[in-house]
Image 1 (cartoon, one colour):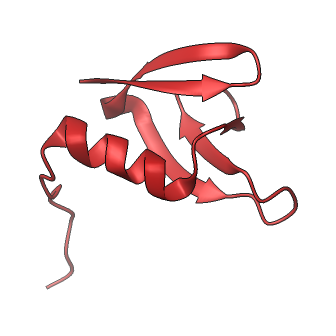
Image 2 (spheres, helix red, strand yellow):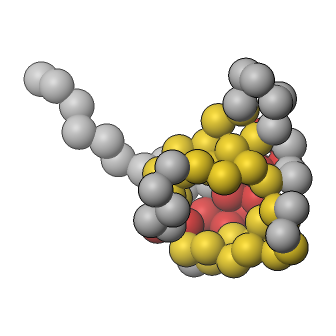
Image 3 (tube, one colour):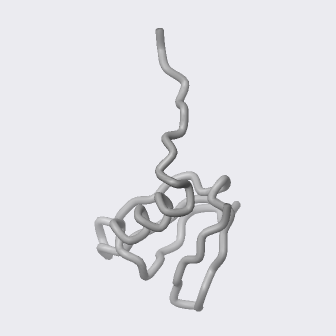
Amino acid sequence: MFIELTTDEGKFIGNLNLLQRVFVNKDTGKTCVVGWNNNGYFEVEESYAELIDKIDNRTFKCVRLRNQKT
């Protein structure tokens, strides 16, 4: 599954399986993503809500299983 994001440099298409984290930068207020071996994060033009909607639409709102402590 792939997702298209908008950056200052243009469009970016990334594999959702490699996306590690989405957050809002407290200094700039911009939405940021971590993953794709970019050694840090990069800012995207989409809002946090728009990005989460894009992810939900691509993953069909599937909930990923997480390791749970017993």
